[in-house]
Image (tube, rainbow over all chains, first blue to last red; front, side, top):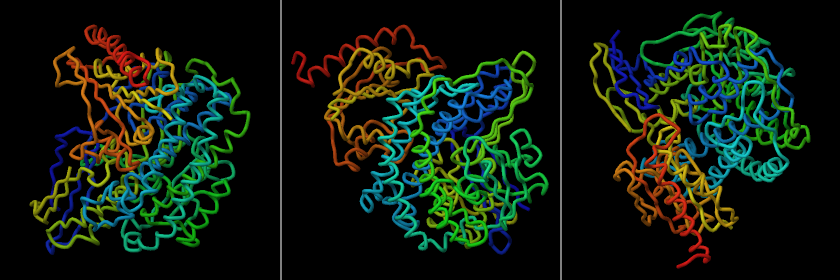
Length: 474
Length: 154
């Protein structure tokens, strides 16, 4: 087996490298997706007082700080052994939903729609948001507006749209005012109109992508996501459910503190991202997926009328079994956008949302606390251990992109085997490798959130380990 | 309609890089007028194009490592098609103006107000030299805005 030396020389966030290993006959044998950035949060948080953890870990990411705030604060609630006020739970839910709205809007409209609407083989110079504006001007404006609404909800509630410190251990800093509630409710009908318009457009065109559906990570895997007490879609506080590739429930009602019973983590020398796997099946066979596709595959219903109609359409893509192609993450994301807007409308309609009791206070009363939430990209786990003085002694973070690491590698291999022939790397192949990664919307911090030119370094390695060709972008 | 938008951007965790947000925060505290919107950001992102599309005049306030420390520069700018418009999490003012023009067919008058800085280490505090420039910038911005609104000396 040829070997490839991994040298993460650059620490610039978001750079990815892909290596393809060929057989003697020139066919693709292996493909690896390397995430070469290093963050180190699990180590440098050690020794800090646990109440600092939400603010510290929110800095993991400038794109989804709210997700880290939610999971981290839940872990701290657990350490304090408190039940936070119901209004605080509702407000955290609202903020988490707004985060999902803006993140999904970014993924679909800004990052993926140029490929989806203009085509992977179109002129790279035109395959960007400006090309999109020419061909689909309303969609371009809709993307900006939907993300703006999600960001504005975060800002109105928490004072900042990036790195807000409003969610804290024990609840939130301040209640929602009537003025903020009114403002949010003015935006929601417009958001729903945009989401429905986009969903109808995408549903009408998805059949065009049969080739990509069959090659972009179309594989049997398990799926994991959080569900509520009825088995419905839940992003803030529920229990984990895992289904197998046939749709059978193999784990049900997994509490946050039990995640280690079902998930273990492996480390590969080629990547700084861990490779979690389903513990009972071992590594690497215990491959599973998280995120919008997985969530829709594990739930009974969304629980809101418009999203449930869309869920029925989604399930018709693969009647009687889970939707298996990672290409359909895009579809799932649009269904979730509908759900999020409907839920925001339901939650802000109730006067309960204005309740002013929003924070419980306590010292650390346990030595271990675990918080789990559903971030836009999938299940997010924060696991902290503290000493008797409340100082952090151990941290384990499992983020959505980590959960999906094995699946992303498998997906890159599938695309490469389908499109790569011989040592030459064609532009169309590069585009599709990039696009299959985007299906997962991985958070390699910001660099994956570019459209048109994600930094990529693709190397073709022969059976003797010699580099046959290399294509670098970005 | 918002007539004037003032955007201060920079990293408030990196010492003097936070000059723009510091200026615009202070301006927002002192300037209460529905026709003026004061915005602070870590970076410029595409959603701001929607805000700019409703403005007649936009001021960008930023720190600049290319200028000598404490030296300011103010200049008119416009959409620059040579600017890198591809990054969706970080746009230059010129690239943001490109977005505004192409998505909304609007081209507000735009100015870039810069302050030369050198110290961009890890701190939420501006250095004394740069902190001492904030009030002057705020005052000049106030005067420029009042002139724009037809309420100040020409």
